[in-house]
Length: 269
Ligand code: MN
Ligand code: MN
Image 1 (spheres, helix red, strand yellow):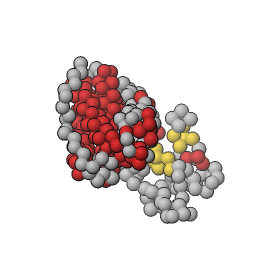
Image 2 (cartoon, protein in one colour):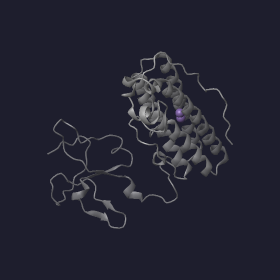
Image 3 (cartoon, protein in one colour):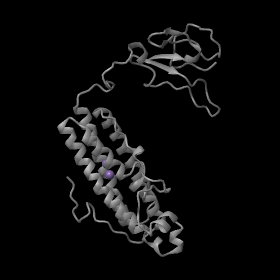
Image 4 (cartoon, helix red, strand yellow):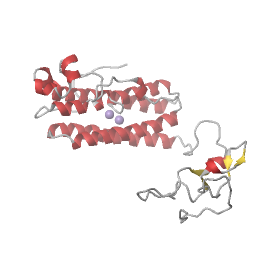
């Protein structure tokens, strides 16, 4: 059940309205990483959630995001209001000025309509929580950029409040995911194919014109990683498993296979 209380979660003030900034703010109103997307994503995930504790978390945060939507909408409207009457202000957002009469609507900063395509809802709680952690990180960085482009100190205060809450949510979703006690790469029910899962395919090889390296790091060496050079030029090790022969010389553009141990310091030929 929803109930509207006639007060904002954070009191919004605007010193000097800036219609162009108001247009940018719409990104957090009706945009891909905006508050409506967050509210709908978590609330609908909550409807699907059979785990009563984590369902409570999703409904708590989904509902808070609706309060954020109200703050951003209020702030955007205060900045966009001059577009109602001032021709120069109207240039900042013709859609809002002409079709919306200076009021906000569920569009992003480019006038694209909000869409449910923004939402990531899989019905798999741990997978959804990962999406939510990433969504909060995106929302945080969008607020940071808005703060960077904002000249109004009162607006900056409101944006800092909203930005901070996204990190709070990120903390809560991360703790909820960890508390499920699932190993990090255990997704769904079907286990990955054992050898194939540890094969790193070096599909982009050589050194680029600007010195872009054929990099090695913890994402492809150490642990149980097995580096497969240029798999397009390697033979299948197992038709069934889809594994490729590791450590081959795939950089020569031919199908010839040269047995070579992959080395982290390998130079390009
Ligand atoms: Mn939010
Ligand atoms: Mn959030």
